[in-house]
Amino acid sequence: EPEVTQTPSHQVTQMGQEVILRCVPISNHLYFYWYRQILGQKVEFLVSFYNNEISEKSEIFDDQFSVERPDGSNFTLKIRSTKLEDSAMYFCASSRQGQALQYFGPGTRLTVT
Amino acid sequence: EDQVTQSPEALRLQEGESSSLNCSYTVSGLRGLFWYRQDPGKGPEFLFTLYSAGEEKEKERLKATLTKKESFLHITAPKPEDSATYLCAVLGNQGGKLIFGQGTELSVKP
Image 1 (cartoon, rainbow over the protein chains, first blue to last red):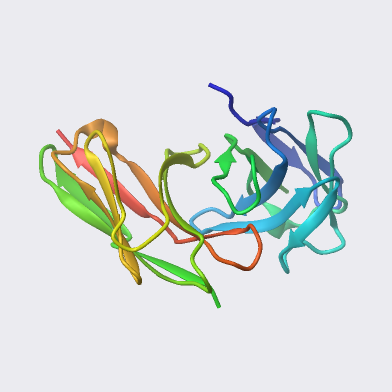
Image 2 (cartoon, chains in turn purple, green):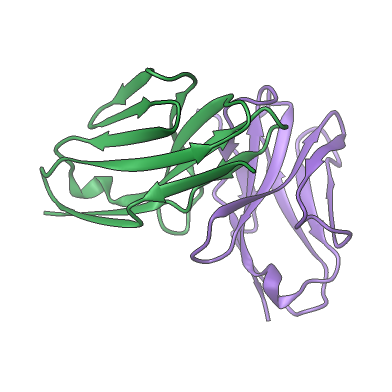
């Protein structure tokens, strides 16, 4: 069964450093998403991406964040200058259509020290 | 503002003791309500999608129902392997983002 994959599973970085989180969505899906979950809190939407551009973003997704689909399979989230409060689980999701069922990856645990 | 509230926050059951989890929502134009299961340190795993009031879906020991204001996830004769956090999320008519509740952490003891 096709699944969303994410790498790395755990990333530790120092405050102010840049990190790139990687995702491989399900191959025939066209819509891609990033969510995050701070420990003990709700899963929160960050950004959605379709046809090589951002279709929607939340207030959390400020200028420090960017997304890219560098090739036909990968979808990345970059945080330019990490802050302590960026520590969270980051989940990638994909869907075949917009406003449809989203399948989630296993997540990347980001720890900023 | 779209909002999802789940109750209880935590539920402890004995194996075989049936119960229900609640998800109350307010959303501008419901396009779908989703139930996911999340194991510790893992991503949400899809269980059910419900689209309109009165709809019901079943899978093994789980049954999801939907009204205009809430959804229930009924667990019949649970087993220890059903222990997980159950997440409810809604999709409104404002874009493709899911709005999640805080989840119900279910623990089933043998």
